[in-house]
Image (tube, rainbow, N blue to C red):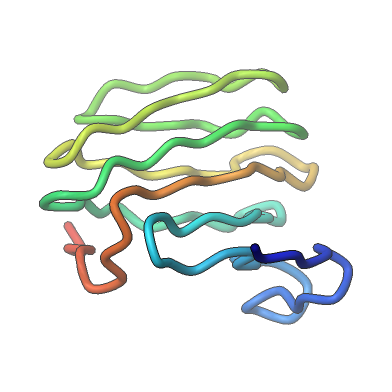
Length: 112
């Protein structure tokens, strides 16, 4: 059993970024916040599937060069090998829940 509260965790970048709520042994998951102008950074995973559920904001989600304008409530499952990025090109904060499985914190490949 593992219990945590989002309010007891810190954003990676101070007021934005990733906030992990669970790390292993089977999944990584948490919340991510993008301020206007921030991006996730294009990357892929070799073996990990990543799911994003957007609760606030309307960023641009790019998966394998296909662009999607997000609406709150949208959910995207990104398969291993798919290059993905999130760009907050709006004037408002964006928040999303993310889940990565299986747990492999080293399975991230940055793509330019």
